[in-house]
Length: 517
Ligand code: HXC
Image 1 (cartoon, rainbow, N blue to C red):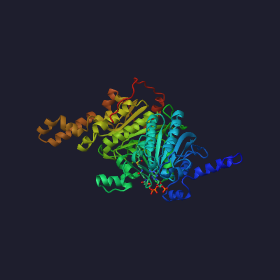
Image 2 (tube, protein in one colour; image 1 turned 60 degrees about the vertical axis):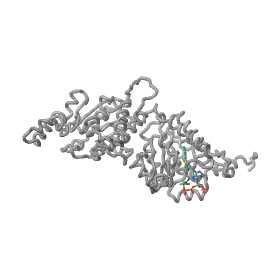
Image 3 (cartoon, helix red, strand yellow; image 1 turned 30 degrees about the horizontal axis):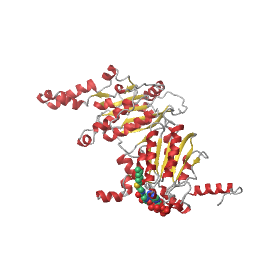
Image 4 (cartoon, rainbow, N blue to C red; image 1 turned 120 degrees about the vertical axis):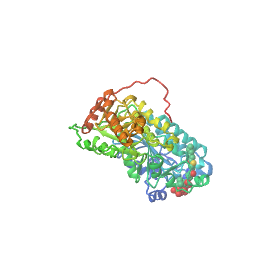
């Protein structure tokens, strides 16, 4: 339509309406039939009512190959802009699968880059809702360049503003690397998948038969690879989880999470007194400890189904947002291994980037022995957690509930690597190793030459346990600041974190450290 003085408004209206329709009613219906919301519906559910301001609704691609000049869709397959969630500013992009399968063209990438740049300049989180067939095949290298422009910005924004990626459809090929470099990934069950090469290529190269879901569905990445931090049953749940996650994290690295108002009571939790079993080899659920310590229903677990011998997640303590890292005696006796070390290290680093204080609940019998662990570099991977804690300058508090053995004692936020307050329950056992293993080594000859070696071993075990299977040696050295009754843990922690609120640590200037990757 030719623009005249009289039809200016009509043309704008028409263009905006056209942009809103994306790939048209048939493709929108197909999207719904798959159980997926459209890009605009997702944004509608994500942001506060009426807060969305779109940027770039009228952008079109510049490709003329393969008849693309005749196929122009306003917005070019991605809806971008800003709005608020619970009143806090966020930037958002949502790929529109109804337009060329949400594939990424040069201009589609430019739109994403534009809002990422605004997010960094204005210090607010970026949320990406991914649903895309990957590189716009008709555009070739222009599309690849667009991806790299986004990757570069992901890295520049890392540790400056929080970045959250929802995978709500396909995400394949090199496209996976943008979400992978953001802080959190959340995948929708059954409708999303992520892989570098799909089932067909896998079949050709390795002769494996595998479905998309098995290769890179939400369950696979939540349990086997740990690529995704969260999973959701559907689009709406996914969006709700993003909102909840954001409530624990600040707008940027110079900001703090707003404290919720909270009136202090007596804060004793008597149930904690009987939570650790009499027998030190019996498990108990560390999540029950967490539930008693934090504000009611405030624990939000991350990586729940991956490496469940360690628990990580956010919570509130008297209204203050904290990150929790806790050994889980219910799984592999809470031992540290390759996956749990990587999982916890990444979480610690996120909290440290964004000024979120850290609480560590410790019951760890050591590092997991075995060829599998050694050959998968438990040395390098275990040191990631050691490194992450050692470099963290946020307030850091540890509670040793039971075992703190060997190198794992040092690693799990010990005083020696910069923790601020270290508490132990009377049930704590802080030693180089368990009493049996220790006695077998240091009293080997005495035990072998005894008339009844078993009785001698038991006697030596008791002797070693009496000396070390308690918190008092460590308390005498000042490695533990206080031995506390379990029931007063919550109260002690509320006070400790309040005391540490304005902690400031100066580090020598350097470009960056060299974490053992
Ligand atoms: C252009 C694409 C497209 C793409 C899909 N479409 N992918 N257009 N470039 N990459 C279009 C289709 O032509 C179709 O258009 C519409 O999107 C919907 O696609 P369907 O195939 O009908 O949908 P569905 O059956 O649900 O299958 C979805 C899909 C499939 C599995 C994603 O479309 C697919 O395999 N696409 C190609 C994936 C791919 O190989 N991408 C490149 C990966 S390499 P019409 O007009 O019919 O609606 C890569 C490198 C990135 O991404 C490197 C970064 C460094």
